[in-house]
Structures are given as C-alpha cells and as structure tokens.
Amino acid sequence: MPATDTCVRNARLADAASISRITDGYAGDGIMLKRPVENIIEDIRNFFVADYRGRVIGCCAIAFYTVNLAEIRSLAVLEEFRNKGIGRLLVEKAEAVLTEEGVKEVFVLTLNPGFFGSMGFREIEKEYFPQKIWRDCTNCPKLMACDEIAMVRYL
Image (cartoon, rainbow, N blue to C red):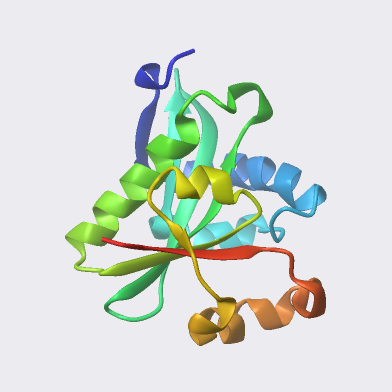
C-alpha cells in the first residue's frame, strides 16, 4: 500500500473512536499519553487523519501555543501501515495548515528523532518550550524521568 493511495484530511467527529484506538496502542507502549475519546472530540478540529479506502489508519494533531508557536502531537499510524510514508503525509498536512495560519515555529516531543530529523526538525532543549511543560507535562507520569526528545522546525 503506497502512501499515494492514502488521503490525509481533517478529522471528523465520527473519526474520534478510531483516533482513540490508534493512539491507545502507542499509549499502551508508553510512547504517548492516553487520549480518551471525549478529549479527542473536544479537540477534533485540530486532528488530521490518514484515510485508506474509508479506514482511518493514522492521525496527528496540532496544538497552538502562541501566534508563532505550535506543536505537532499525537502522531500515530496503525502498525500494519507503518514505514509506508503515512506519518510523513500527516506531518506535511499539519505543517501546511500551520504555515497557512502564519505559525513560524513548530515543535515535537518524540522518541523517534530520526523520523523528525529526516523532515528538517532539529534537537533543542525541552526548556525552550515552557508553555508545553506547564500545559501537558505536569500531568505526565514521566515528568521526572522524561525520555522524549524536543525537536523544532522553522516554517
């Protein structure tokens, strides 16, 4: 299944359960925080999904911090569709929307720096993003032993 057969689109309310199932797999592996369906529904307008023949196979979301700073988060692809360019398509869609909004800087917290490095992100200290730390990290069980790598890209 090549990435060219996949459509990346804005998420719809009907996609919330699929997004939750996909991200739950990553949360179960300790790769990302669990996102309950109710939380996804609240943020549905900030999610994108990869749709393959009517099936949601991947997702990502954007979170705005300032008019110039945003985060790409909750990037997840079903295991059977990984390493086929789906994650790249999702990130490219998120970056296109952020660019359209006038955002100048986008960051990620990741356990896969190679993937984001191949997309032009560079490593940076987490402390550069105090907004993220106060908004999300204080509720994370890994707060005192965070193993994620902060990366940034200028749009």
